[in-house]
Length: 605
Image 1 (cartoon, one colour):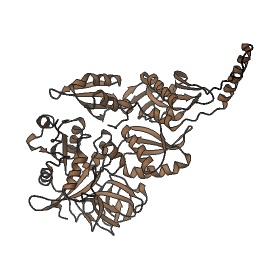
Image 2: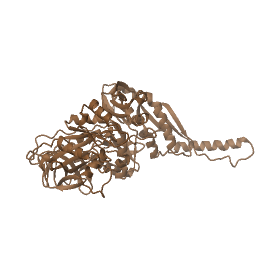
Image 3: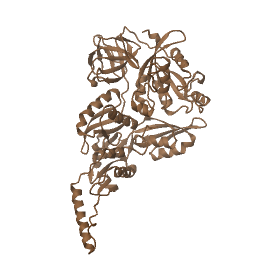
Image 4: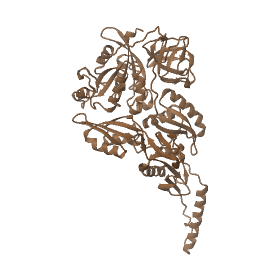
């Protein structure tokens, strides 16, 4: 394929600005799928993505387009997610492109994630085409958005393309801008092969399907390829392009985006960001890979049925192939048995992984309360990283603890500034900046503890601002903090899976909340159950689940009151003996209720 006729591009935007809808119109315009087979959000092939209206996985598709100059161009679109949790997916997609469409909702304007994704594109030196979307809506304010483009982004507003993904307006203009403004890929077919793995997925009949962008050289069936990071060698069986379905071709050459199959059964041999080269004539150096996704929230996953442990292990291995940001290692709990300690990008990522494990792999699981990584400095001078309450050292051996902080940027209408400032103060935040972007919008910048953000910050932000505030964050340096280990006791026994690391000032509030939720979800027994929150040996909250009681005095009528007392005392002794030997079964719903911060769920709109 002629390199000058190839364009590799991506669509970036804030969440819910219409990326998937615009991608649908681009695909329909190129007629690579019939109207009968077409469905909305065609690139979002997971049920969760369709239900929530969000993109979680970046997908690729090749679009053949006949330009006004009469030439046929092959445009490789790599769709990207918009939620702040999945910015890693965006960075991987951008590494495989030469240009981007920056989508801005004409009713919402420029938001925090719009700016964050733009800076990401500029880091990769990509050509940026600004598209103002949803211009057909009655509430669209194109003039306001054009002012923002000039003021906030520094682009010429007259060059912005006016479009509507829903109505199909401006689609031809977008295609022409891609062809004329985005440069063709570079690379030499005769150089040693260098292909970047930007994604992969597992096919149970054909093994691992590797998604690759070829930067130098070419690859064809029969070639012996080497993965430079893992040093594994495979023989290529098939290569081809993404045209919604996999379409076989004779070879993949420099500048092209496609897939390859090599009967790769061992999932751990594939590293996203690794470089593919030929075994017989390898490249001198690997390509600059992607930065490794760094998990920020940690939670343990356990199978509800212990015999499902192997199934869970296999499911996580396959999920890891398709979700490079997920990390996991073996874990064990006295209450829940064997499981895995997993690292996630945020609370929405936790929910997505949970739903995918249950839907795609049929494994029923229990999650523990999320935690972040703390730097614990011991009195002997040693420093340990703690993300699991089970590994929390003895308080007498701790000198100081530091927790991760983030710089959070919020863009909000000025009406909600007071509510958001109160929210940030409640979450132990420190104001760094407050800037009026224009007469109606304010940019708030706060330093906040990551632990407060992953708990329920996103929910409250959307609630306090009635959905209008946008949010993005980046990591700063850790700061000293006063963290304690909060234990939850059920019937006098510590349930290790419910333990959590919290700031001392928030410990009682979290303990009361956990005890109340457990009281509502743990079923009553024949004996009284005490649910307590404790820091060390000090009880800071308590709820009691009453016992089932039989009316033992019903048959005792008349006579002295001591007869009734005798029967009640006998019952009381029986309950006491029962409590000593009784076992409280904690249902899955109880663990999940403690995990949830409130009635709303992070990421659901």
